[in-house]
Image 1 (cartoon, rainbow, N blue to C red):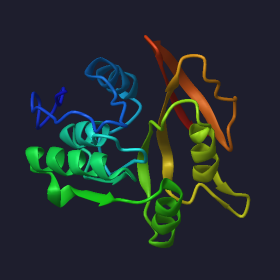
Image 2 (cartoon, rainbow, N blue to C red; image 1 turned 90 degrees about the vertical axis):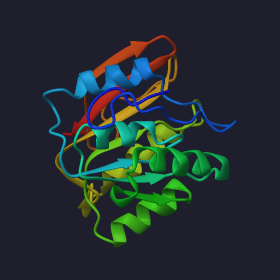
Image 3 (cartoon, rainbow, N blue to C red; image 1 turned 180 degrees about the horizontal axis):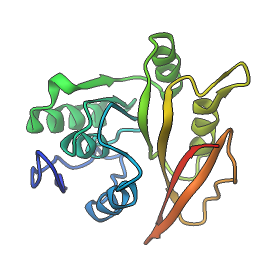
Image 4 (cartoon, rainbow, N blue to C red; image 1 turned 90 degrees about the horizontal axis):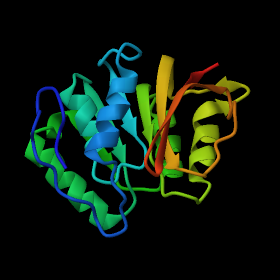
Length: 188
């Protein structure tokens, strides 16, 4: 694995922890191609199921100001720390080693806002839809963690369904890459 473009182009990243399924270089490149013209590399990025941290580090390499990475697996956290150090990104990265649900509540309490959110949860566990609903917020407080015009990049396994209009989100684009399906969503 490596950083594909930007400031850290070509920088090698450490491989996944045993329980981690990283986004391949090919899919990561395709994701950022899909984001081209839709997202200006500015502001903060949230990588909710960070794994190796590759998606957030790629966004930082391409100009995002800072990133919050959330990962609960201790082995994956060690990989992320090594990858952040390899890129010299420590000052721009906040790592939360906790469950994604707790992390969202904490970030909301702190008033954090994100222009892009990467969601690549373990496949076939229903976590993607649950996380999207949590990010959508409540009727009295819709999408409190998202900047206006924020984009969500949601990865799932081929054959794993993602209902139309989850929460207040609409699908802008969706592509299949082998066994991976990537959807780009925004608030409706």
